[in-house]
Amino acid sequence: MAVNKVEICGVDTCTLPKISHRESVELLERIRGGDEDARSEFITGNLRLVLSVIQRFSGRGEPPDDLFQVGCIGLIKALDNFDPSHNVRFSTYAVPMIIGEIRRFLRDNSSIRVTRSMRDTAYRAISTRNRLIDEKGVEPRLDEIARELGVEESEVVFALDAISDPVSINEPLYRDDGDAVYIVDQIRDETVSDEILVNSIALNEGLSRLTERERRILTLRFFRGKTQTEVADEVGVSQAQVSRLEKSALSRMRKYV
Image (cartoon, rainbow, N blue to C red; front, side):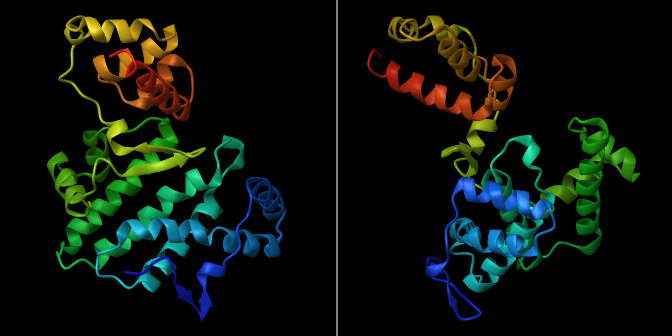
């Protein structure tokens, strides 16, 4: 699957333009003012982002042209819903939406058939989840979603599982300022304990060489089993900063452990 060269309407995507972060910000300002030319320029300047995303889906048996066009739909949806006031790069926001659009396309075209009623339940559950998040500002529990839909909780679970596309825990969720945040970084590990911390003199020696904040981050991440998001909330920094500090601290520890 040659996705590094995709022709859409006879245009070689290898020749697509690139836009800098500064140009992106300027175009977004013009788009908010209703400038349709800026909108077209912004979409064209971000088509390379779509190309980078569809490479993850090579080997699925779908034509690259189809994946690219579906990815473009995700890109446009991301632009329509993007809020610059959240101080997040557009690419960070857009990648998950492009991935989601492609996964929906692959699910709908999958050879594994899911009944219409189960698919409808799953999509209603997703819609209800999003509505409850908007209303309450927190992730709703499955039983809350089931109660809103008037169905059993197990029915919601089965429906969502049926439309889920298996992914590797090492797949990046998104990138923030160049640092990838992986699925494995968001998985809580309940099997770890504080005893690990005192079982190795070498480990203690390595930890002693770190700053107080670095020690706290590593302790929360690897000895408390918390996700990077949870650590970011406790430490008071962004998830991207937690990722960078974690990698830096582990790199320094390797010199002593």
